[in-house]
Image (cartoon, rainbow over all chains, first blue to last red; front, side, top):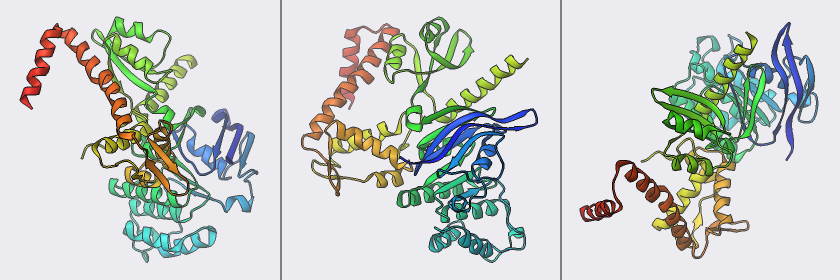
Length: 298
Length: 123
C-alpha cells in the first residue's frame, strides 16, 4: 500500500524545548488514523509540519512522496482543519464555501450544501456573527466536502454539542466508505472516535510512544483485581501499565502477550478480570509515562 | 436495544459474533447474503476495514463464503458449525466460571446440580 506520509527521525525544537523528538512513522493511503495524546504533547506541532506550516528542526518529512514545503501540487491534496480555525470576519459562510471550492480540486458542492443543512448553518450570516459551535461546524463542513486525499482534523469541535459531534462521525463514515481517503483525527474524545479509527498513534512529551493497529490494541490490555499477593504473582513477567492498591486488594492493568491465555491464567488464579477501553489504556500509558519521566528529571 | 459494540474487546470479534448470532437465530439462513462491510461500517459506526476483518474471520472458519463480485454468503452447514463452536465457548465462559464461583462459596457439585434443576423448573 502507498505511504501518504513518511516521517523519519523528525525533530522540532523551540530553543531548548523539544516539541517533537526523534519521531518516525508512516501513514498509508485511505486509512483513518487517530493521533492521540495529552495537551502539549506535540500533536499540533506534528500536524503543522505535515501541512508545511512550520519547518522541522531536523529529520526527513515526505507527504505524497515529496517535500511538502511550497509544493502546490501536494498542498492542494491536503485539507487541514484546525482547532479554532480562523476565517475572515466579514465573509459570509457562503463566501467561505466559495473560496474552499476554488482551493480544493475534489470539492463537492452538493455534499457541502447537504452538510450545511445537517448542521443548520445560516449560509448568509457573517463569520463574526457565528457562535463558537457554528464556527467549528463550518470547519467540519469544509473538511468533509473538500474530500482531500489527506484530510486532517485537529480537535475540530470546540463548542460543538454532542448531537453535532455524532453527526460529524456519521457523515464522515458514510462519505469515507464512498470516497476512501486518508484521514487524521486528533482528539481528546477518544471514546467517541475509537470505533472509527483503523490505526492509532500516541504522542507523549514529543515522543511517539505507540503506533499500532486499533484492533490489535483493543482487548490487548485488561485489568485484574484480587488479593494483592495473588495479583503480584500474576504480574510477574508481564507488562504492567497501571496499578492501584485498595486495602488488601490490588487492581492492575496489564498488556497481554497472547490474547486469551493471559486472561485464562488470571481467571484460574481467581482474579477478577475487567476490560479496558482504548481511552483508559491511553490515559494509563500517557499519565504513567510522564510521571516516570518527571521522577527521572528530578 | 443492548449496546451494539462494547469497548475493551476487538470489534472485529464482536462483528463476527453478531453474524454468528444471526445465523443461529435464523435471521441469516444458509445461502443468504450477508450485509456488505460498508453496510456494517455505516450501521455500527465502525471502520470498514474492521468490519471486513470480522467477516473474513468467518470466511476463514468456513462459515461464510465469498461469491466473487457479488458478496458474502452463509455457507452450507454453517449453523451446525457455529453452534458447535458456541457450545465450546459456553463451557469455558459459563460452566467453568460457575464452578469456580461455586467452589469459592463452598457449594458442592450435588448442590450445584440441584440448583440447575431448580432453575430449569422455574422457566
